[in-house]
Length: 273
Ligand code: SF4
Image 1 (cartoon, rainbow, N blue to C red):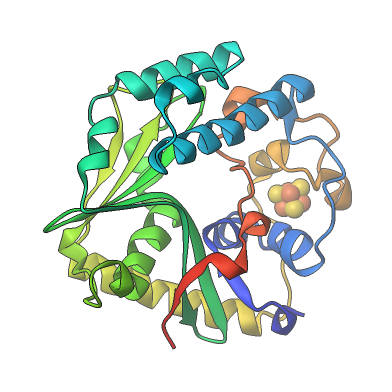
Image 2: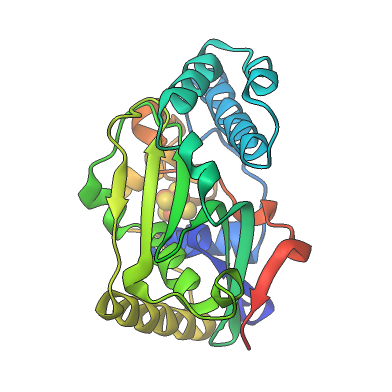
């Protein structure tokens, strides 16, 4: 069935890594979520929606809409606080002096029989470097060690090195020019920063290529042995892995908002065949 799948993303790869069965249910069978991911359900859903809305506010800011106008749209307690943190962090508004800024941009490159696709919150190109920004509205700040090994961190840097030449006057970015920053809206003075090297890039691309082959030829998609992962999984009822959801502040770093289906394929900037 994996032959019917044409694209891979950081979300689908993370799901495959965390639980092949979840990958199968979400991306191959494309089943709707039968259960809430975390409790309390309503509060968690509201927090997720606010997080998505904050992304839109940041995007509007970087396409040039005046901050005062955007501030009026930050109409909940969380949004107001995040927006205030965002606009007070001098490093972010200063980005507007960058050589070029791409908000909500999508890159893609072939990966085995698939296309690897990623949607970036912001890519800031300066003279000798390029920075990937990703906005996170987690209630708890995750450890850097955790973020470093997430597929998002590996895919976003690797794909920019592989398919970002059109953002740099036709020249591919050297891995050493790339940095990725997770900017935590509730912890603005403590972003996570990850540099990149040619060695890491080779390791990441080799691992991605291997994973693509594995997914393409997988005879089955077994359930994870780590039962704790099921606490925050919306597919619990398909697997008879519990009824009650885990607590939301623990869950949100485990269950990223699913970005894959939000990707507008007409926006894909570069397909490096
Ligand atoms: S409930 Fe557990 S086994 Fe089933 S898809 Fe979710 S994580 Fe995998």
